[in-house]
Image (cartoon, rainbow, N blue to C red):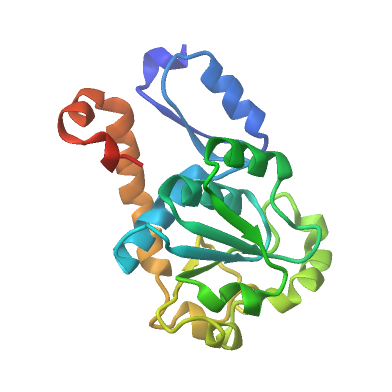
Length: 227
């Protein structure tokens, strides 16, 4: 029924299986707006921002400091697709899903994905340093435990001093200032957070073009240009 009313639908769901179930009916394009497993629309905007700020994708290194959550998992996949390197720096128990990583490795055997516990070591060769809230929606009961676990994973001036001077700062917003990131960093000249937020719109415009105008894509975009 819904497929007769709309050309595409964006579905945000707590469980990834619900988006897959909706898509299985094959009634219209289904866009994953966010699930507990991944956040592909956000990751598209993130890598677009990296390309704009750093001049391309190849061999660029994104370091995610914080929880190995749905955002981190989608960025890890994007880096594997685009020939980039991805490092997660997190405390024990907050790593990315092992099954998800296995699927990435099977599909992209040359992927460069690693976990480094020490954030200062992790950012030593970073081109972009990314962070997200320590407690996501639905995890409020874990807030105190997470705050304690991630206390040494704040993106602050000391951490940025351990990174190359050209490194850019990313955050998917909204941010909890003073927790996972300080005012001095998110408002610094190295921060691409506002540009990144604007690219959410531009990346999704491109996604809709790709989904709804396949003939135009086939006529105008070479296969090696597609993500």
